[in-house]
Image (cartoon, rainbow, N blue to C red; front, side, top):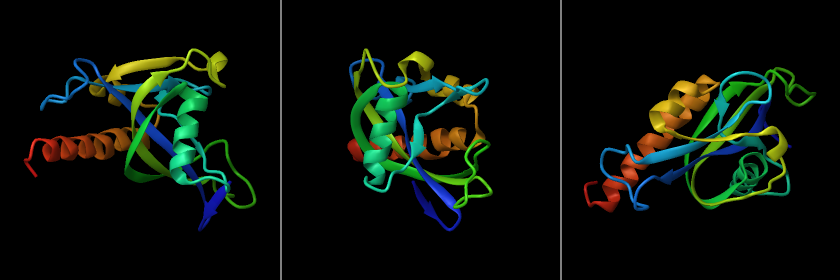
Length: 163
């Protein structure tokens, strides 16, 4: 596990796909994001977990997508860093349970039939508005709305020559 200034460093992603034709329209309503059930209560989550010492933050985010959600894809850009307090992870290096998550956009290209946490996870493809309503944690909603959606809008503008 990696730590920085009393925070446990974690990595995760907002897995997404396009509903129609593999391309996004200007309104963004054709985007679906993948969320998974929480093992500790109501609400849905994006895959995320500890960033190990022997991997890059990008490798950690991609690994968590496979382990927790059973998806692979093109890990794109960092959409932001988000701080939160873990209710379950407290140790000598992080006694307060503070965490800092690096969240990436992941364009899903493959859904696996079998993955490490399949027996305890259910995948849900949701519209962005459905996902925002179902986020278990406020920081994940921020990662979706303030991070991913802004990033996606910028990418779309660049592709269309509007930046």
